[in-house]
Length: 488
Ligand SMILES: Cc1ncc(COP(=O)(O)O)c(C=O)c1O
Image 1: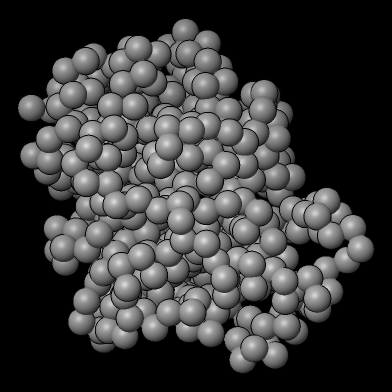
Image 2: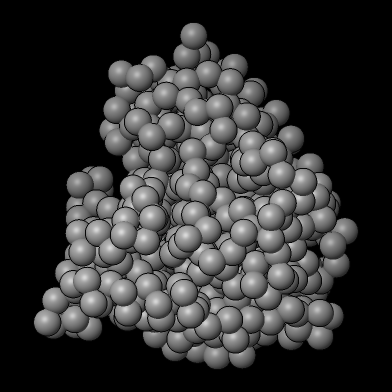
């Protein structure tokens, strides 16, 4: 049975009519119409091309989906994607990546997770846009997504993120926040999530601070189940191949992995979770620092359906760092062209996207996949988010420059002769080990009731979540009717 706790965000009825009334009035005044989850899964029409996808225009809510084309202003029939050529991957299996940098405002799909966590709060009267502050704890992109979503929904949003994240993330936040106090920097870098939680616990003492914790908000899981799941289904169909072998995704909040649950139900494909070898929490119950920004936060998120995960692949951040250089420098691209590889699509892969690429190669090799087999995955963001990292990595690891010789050595080490050892088919014991590890964070540290934590072991519990999507959609439709805002 699904019980409601403050962490889950699973509310599907109006809790406070007065708050709801205020939201209706505010959204009517500001002409904000909310898309349903179904509309984001199967967008029927494009937002006017005149609306800048990077502007704080509420119509951009209708672009929070996978079907924006490369201009980010028009609709694509199939989610825009990158097909990794066999010369790069060394496998005949089809490796296909949906492109997150086509999403509006933040150029990453995390804006969708943010919408999925806030929209249900608005339409159930559990977030008051005139009074409450949405708190977005994250290591980067989700906080940016949250700030963007808050702003275009005429609400106050606060980003809580580690001070050591990439400069591009902070530059973006500086442009989008209304008050400099709305960016809170916590100590550390990528894997310092406990420090973020501690800050949120402090903020939560003020009842007007609504913590939208992506690691425990089931709206995040459900949005990926429906919206990313169906986008992946279309991508697979477009390949014309017979077998969807696996869905591969690096895990930060584990929201994206929700698409794997959908695909497994429809196609029986494997769900492969990816993490940094330097912080191998799932693989070895390990911990550590790494530079695959956005993933690997030293704990198992509450919304990770660990009992349904099939394999874990670990990727070293040395590989993602150095391949970022290979894919995005002139000498790297020249080397690739010499190998018959067109480098033009590789700039759409940010650090965690390269991790997904390397993990997908491991999946193909481990399971001996070949022609006719398809692996789908996501490129959460593109290299444009890591320009400063390219310089930093070059200075740190290639003080004499990244030329033809270094490009060849990088290609050989991380692609042609890539290691495949840090890979595990979980089986029952492995799944239980990962599931159980979550106990320490969620029950002992964050106070989630034991029965709620345990209930998630069972797949029927996850199946019972799905009707929330339709119920939220009905509430969203009703809300829009009351505001009277239409885009026709
Ligand atoms: C760049 C990047 N890649 C991957 C992820 C992981 O996605 P998820 O949180 O859905 O597991 C994130 C999450 O913030 C991210 O920012």
